[in-house]
Image 1 (spheres, rainbow, N blue to C red):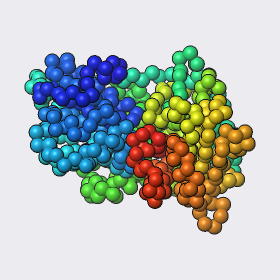
Image 2 (cartoon, helix red, strand yellow):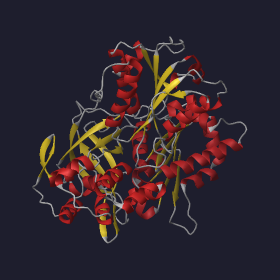
Image 3 (tube, rainbow, N blue to C red):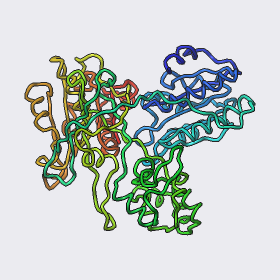
Image 4 (cartoon, rainbow, N blue to C red):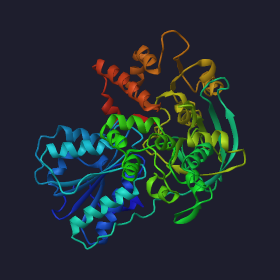
Amino acid sequence: MFAGIRKLWGGDNVAPAKDTITILYGSKSGNAEFVASETFRHLKDLGQKARLKNLSSYKAASLADESTVLFVVSTHGEGDPPPSSLRFFKQLNRMQEELAELNFSVCALGDSDYDHFCQAGRKLEKRLLELGARVFSERVDCDEAFEVAASGWISTVVKKLTNADNPETLSLQKQDRTWHVGLIRDKQKLNERAADSVYHICLSIDASTVFYRPGDSIGIIPQNPVALVDQILLRLNLKPDELVDVQEELSVREFLLTKAELTRLSRALLERYRELTSDENLTDLLTEEQACRHYCEAHDFLDLLQDFPYPLKAGEFPGLLDQLKVRYYSIASFQPNTPSEIHLTVKQLSFSRRNRLRQGACSNYLSEWLAPGTAVSFFVAPDDGFRLPADPTVPVIFIAAGTGIAPVRAFLTEREQHACSRNWLIFGAKSRADDFLYQQQLEQWKHSGTLEYLDLAFSRDQSVKVYVQDLMLRRGEELLKWIDAGAHIYVCGSIAMGRDVRAAIDAMLSASVDQCSLNQLIEDKRYCEDVY
C-alpha cells in the first residue's frame, strides 16, 4: 500500500505549490510511515493537495520552499532518528537559512519503556523552532501503542488545515499486519548451568503463508504470569469470575491475564492512577521525572497497588491499565534451510525483588508455560533497514552480545551459502562455560571458513572484565582494513552495548585520517543495529 502512494505523490526535487501540504516521515519499523500515510489519506479524502515523502529522499534545504509540513518521526536507539533519516537531520542541524515562512507540526513515535522517549521528534521540533519555523499544532508523543494518540494528532492537524467540520477523531485503517499461528515444536536450554536461562525455541509454521528473511523479527502478545494476576485479585478482594466489559465480556482474571500490561508500568498509567486515588505521595513522585522513570522501570502493577493503596473495582481496570504490549524477538533462522520453522533465542527473565518472584511476561510464556505442541499467535515484523548486502562478496563484521547472537545466526546461515563471503564475528557474554550460546555451531563455522575470525569476550572469566568494545579496540587495525575494504557492520544486543560499540567505532574512525565517519557509514547503510 505504502509503495503505491509514494509512486503517485511527491516528485523528489519538485518545489510544492504553496497550498500543498507536505508530509515527511522517518521510520524504521514502519509505524511512522503508516501514520504518515493515514494522514495523507485523510487530507486527500477532504480534497486537500498533499504529498508524502520519506525523509531519506528529502533535502533539508527544501524546507525553505514549503509553507506547511507535517512530520512523523520515530526514535531509534538512544534518542536517534531512524538510520534512513540521519542525512536529513544532519543537513537540518547545519542549516543557516531561516524558515520563517514554514508552519509545521510533529507526531513523534517512541517507547516509554526506554530512555530518550520520542527524542528524535522532540529534537526535530526544537531545531525547526531555532530556525524560525512556527508550530501550528502541538507536538504529540506516541507510545508503542500509538494508535489513539496518533489518531488524535491526525484529527487535530486535518481539522486545522482543512477547516473541515470533523469534531470526531479520525480513525486509522487497520495496519497491514497478518497474524499467524505456530506450534511450539521444541525448546532447548542453551546454558544449563547459567543463572540466566536462555532457550532455543523452534516454532513450526505454515511455509505456504509465512515468509521471513534474516533481519526480521516476530511479534507475540504474551500472557501475564498467573501468580501475579492471582496476587492482584487477592489484594483487591476481587472474584476471579467477575465480568468486565471490553468490547467482549471477559472475567476479570482473563482480562488481567491476556489484555492488560501488568509487568511494566508507564508514566501515563501512574497519572491515571493518581487521578483515581488523589494520592499525595504519588503526586510527588510524578513531579520528579527521574524518580518516576526509575519507579516505572523497577516495579510492576502489584507494587503500585501496595505502595499507593486504593480499592480498585474490576470495572475500573479497562480504563486504567495499559494494553498488553507486543514483545518482539529477532528471528534466528534462515527460511530456505528450515522452511517450516522459525527459531528464537529467548532469555528467561526471572528474579526476586521485595520478597517476591518477578517473571517476564513473554520470556516465561514461551520458555516455561507453553508445552510442546501448544499454539502461539504471532506476526512477522520485517526490517528492510537490517539486511545483508546484496553482494555476497562484501565483507561483513558482526558484533553481538548475549541473545543478540540470534539475528547473527540467521545472517551467518545465509552467508555460508556463499563460499566467497568474508565474515567476522565478535561475540561477548559473561562466561565461556555457561553463556557461549550456539558454541558448537559458531566453532563449526570458524572451522569451515564461514567465519574468517571469531573473537570472544567473556567478561567474568578473568579478574579484569573484557567486553566486545575492548576486543574491537585491540583489533582496531584489522577492523579498519575491513572497513576500508567496504565491510558492513551489524551490531546486535542491548542499547547500552550498542552505545559502547558506537563509541569504539567512532574513536577508531576519528583517529584515522583515511577513514570515513561513523555517520557516513550509517548513511551508506553500512552500519546497522538491532538493539533493545
